[in-house]
Amino acid sequence: MSGTGRTGGGDGRLGSKLSGLAVAIGCVLFLGGFAWAAVVYRPYTVPTESMTPTVNAGDRVLAQRVDGGEVRRGDVVVFTDHAWGDMPMVKRVVGIGGDKIACCEKDGRLTVNGVPVAESYLQAGDPASAADFTAVVPKDQLFLLGDDRRSSLDSRVHLEETGQGSVPRSAVQARVDAVAWPLGGMIGRPQAFAALPGGVSSPGPLKLQLGAMAAGVVLILGGAVYGPVAARSARSKRNEQEKATAGAR
Image (cartoon, rainbow, N blue to C red):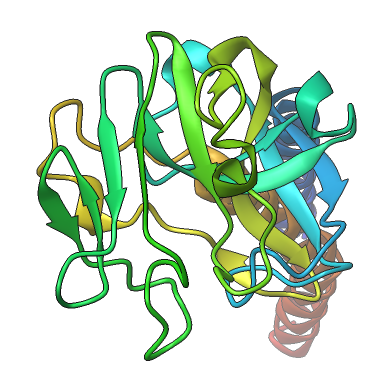
């Protein structure tokens, strides 16, 4: 009987250890992913409808802290510039230093260095701009437009100013990766700019961080459930073995 008791107790202790290990690993994954996201990302509230339909006024977005030098065409960025009112603004980068931005070609599309850009993020049927314009982006500057070209006050409004409506790369504070609330999912990189020199930026680590947190939650819950279940199973097995031994006497 003593040997049987040790076997059942060993099963219970093993289950308890596995449960504790799963919870510990889960806590590391969840807290590590959360801390990583808190360092890399910053929440912003979109102030206007100028980026509709990509993001709407009042949406809470998660923006990756990046240096302006990392920004590529197609990125949705948060920036602050004195000429734009010294407040955080959210716009899309359509041109970088050296680019000639023009609108509109015969199909109503924006052109970058003479190449038409199919901007799939615009409202269906809308032209790239209601009024034609041309601008040459100075070195280390960015040309920015809202996705709602009918209402957005963007680089087109500042064409007569120094830099033809562009802002310095240093004005960029972050790059928007996702709509956090209401839940809207990830904001992808538009492939329309991928063929241009420099291509598009790589996705941020948000999916990996969320995956780590989700895996952590699963392990924590699974470990918390497994421990009591394993202990109960070990007790039941031990009781059955004890009854079988007693019956054999």
